[in-house]
Amino acid sequence: MMQQYYIGAKEAAPILNLSEGKTYELFREMNKELKKAGYVTVAGRVPRSYFNEKFYGGVDSCIEGR
Image (cartoon, rainbow, N blue to C red; front, side, top):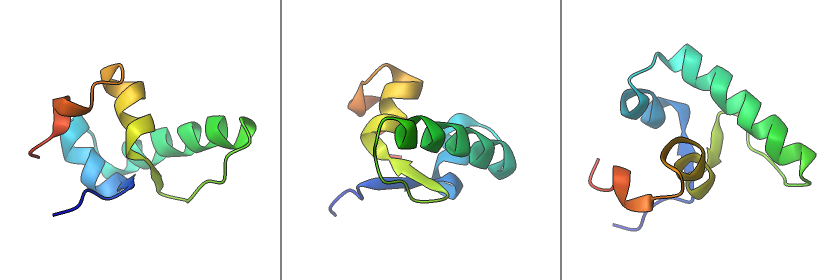
């Protein structure tokens, strides 16, 4: 199965062991950072590579298989 470009807050919440509400709050902050850098954002989602960079230092393999 091809991996999706974006990760949603519902998928990220159990990975981070946080509530969906807290995850949405973190995603809003990340989307503000992305928008400030000139990127188009999608509410409730962030690019998977950006998520991995912010939470795992850019290591994609940390959450593979979840």
